[in-house]
Image (cartoon, rainbow, N blue to C red):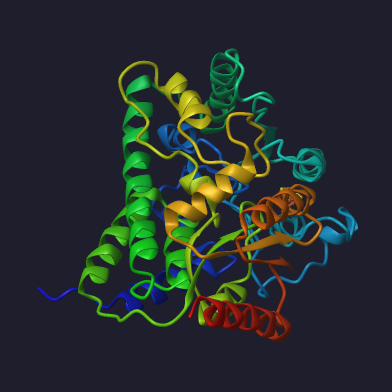
Length: 388
Ligand code: SF4
């Protein structure tokens, strides 16, 4: 049987990802009338805890231009990052009226304080902060985090009026292990043959995980990977770059498109929460402890996790080496303190190693990219000339 074209699968997920009413979550609720929905920011959350309780975990993020910020501006200052304002706007405006629970990560002042703003304004939503360990390298970190996961699980059980067994947790871990494996495979295709999978396509296919049941997403990724085997493509004369800065607020799709017109993005930190755990989480032993151990010890890096075993500059250099990139784009969301701070250290490390890089800022709802296009094209062309 011939496989369907990859373009068709990408169009299908794009329609779901770009619709701020979360149509896939609504469809799930139609078939699960008593179902509950747990929202969280896309930087890592152990979604297995929600899934095992029969709760749908959803990553709440902004939507390029589709969402106008009106009501949220009365509660959050204009100098706060866009994702915090757009997530609040989604709920205040009634666009996204599905939430029963929302969990904030304590990744920055904005996320921590947003919890109180939400709790005051949405009495029907159980708002929680998942207190991640400050010192990820401490021997006490795994038992501490396992205790914190158990506390959040009790809240989820309360919301869902259920009790979660270890067997249910193991089944959820297996499902999410499969999802992470499929995403790793997608990224392998992008890294090794970037002419076969555009960065925007990989981004949409990955981001869809955050807005639909993971069972459906696994199926979409299987279809996409089968379609990619059939896709032909020839390498073009473009430099390979690593793009970092998309760990929390996401760059607009049009910005990724502008970069990919001039460069192959062979690795990135878009939607890092979906790829935070780098290996399968074991399903023997205590599942909560296994999840806590995986978060701390089998995981990626980001500007919002402080782990002395993972110096971020060295991790970036390793990402560049392992992906075969020749240069880097060091981006940060406007008003994102952790992202902007990290740009300085990244730049110094790249200068020291003689790795060309372009520094930029973005905002999820930016609409004009002509200036960025000019900068990226000039950057890419100068390198092509230098490497020729
Ligand atoms: S974009 Fe930056 S400042 Fe905003 S919530 Fe995320 S980490 Fe915090």
